[in-house]
Image (cartoon, rainbow, N blue to C red):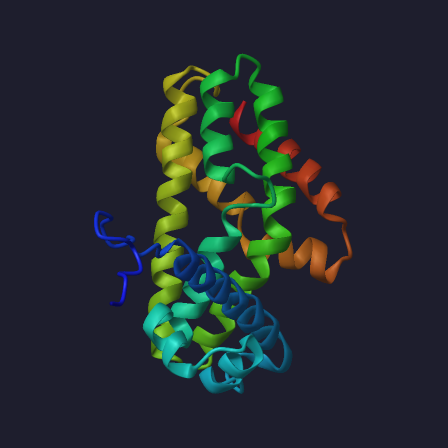
Length: 217
């Protein structure tokens, strides 16, 4: 007589999907890493989803299922860049700095350090989106509008928080403060000073801090 594998009184072993989820997450990270590399060289327009899938060791179906399209891949790379290089997401660290700050100048210096951290990761992606949109890619043009709108809303969020805490000069409007934040975090400013003029990210961050102090405090 054959004995049941789990024994007569044992319930069937539950299926543990954690391993499968971990492998899928690792595959998504590999896809984004390969997409980022290929989009910058040889370039966004000439790179296909099939090439990205092959480089990442997954199927094209996996890429489409998880990211939807090439524009979806760029959007995911952009979102990933906003986390920064620290263990805690940069926006979370920024909110904490704004909540805890008592010295406005020190807060602007902290903002400058955040920009120095994030810009080398995020600005090349923003410039890729801009250039692809300018080439006539409708999906990337829509993504550029979405990214710009989201970035402005984040800068408006920052402006409202620091004004509410009385950290900026009296009479400064939320809109003007948001515009200053928006300008100093732009990929175009990073492109001009770092990519074209050869500034280091640290020098760039100090310039951003000085610009924020001069215009907001």
